[in-house]
Image (cartoon, rainbow, N blue to C red; front, top):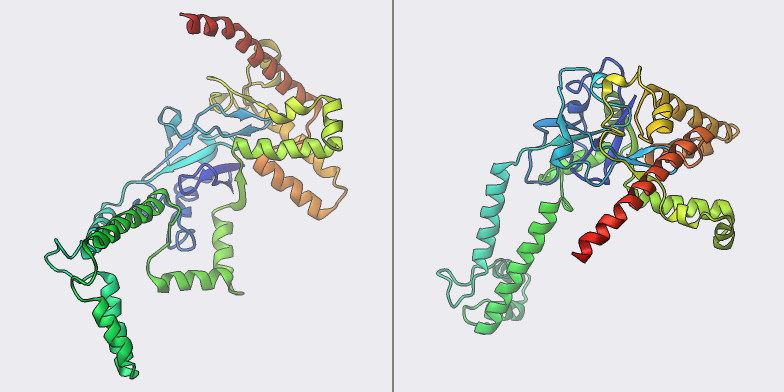
Length: 385
């Protein structure tokens, strides 16, 4: 079956992985983060440089999820909040702990040596730019050190006038007091911006060692990348990412418009509202909160008819697979179209579904609308109080 693993603690990087029935988290998922046998040497998997390279624990998200307009599940933006996380046993089989398509969230411990080292380097750099008027060691800023190197070079190349000019500029007191404080303030802002990029993971290098970076890049872009191919295959890497709701909504909106033949045609068909707000958010006890023990014995479609609750079951996944195969058959053996359909399914779910799944979503949306109507009077009363 396929599951999703969150990389870099980023909700836009929920990658799909193929797992077999006998696979455990120890020999499959944790292997992803291994430097020797996994992907850690090719890409940064931690949230930022301030965390350890390998996760300390694995959790599954039990947030119910979001039901798309065609009966598939997306992960909610709150899927990684503490109340929805359940610790996984890395020694036990994956299939006995997860629903197909469920999200695994690795948790990383902070790397205190990196944090302390970073703080020391930043403070040392900041000290070098302390204004000369208060610095115990004036004139040691990085710019001055570079200028001193250029003075030596220009003298060696017989450009004494340039060397003299540089020497005048780095003399202590050559810059006004106000300018010194302005430069110091700019330096503080610069360090804050740099720290922000590192903290958020916007800049998240595999290593600060240029040789390590070069070796990794040569493997990825080189013709002989069999090592990378073998590793990707061994960890079940598929390469698809599950989309967050906003991305799904935008793509589905455009799909419905193109299918209808434009905005005017879509308006006449009455699909504008559905295309603008597709699907429905699930509540407690639904979706991925369905007890896993009910996978093969439980039902999905009958409970929806009776109580308008969306429960997962093998019955549901069989229908999902059936609908996907039907969409693939419509591609008429056109390989690029088939691949595009499968990629879209893994990222967004189905865009065309059977009457059975369509009714499933319709009933659940009607139930949500009914609950909203019932809650509306009480909300108005609270506002008037």
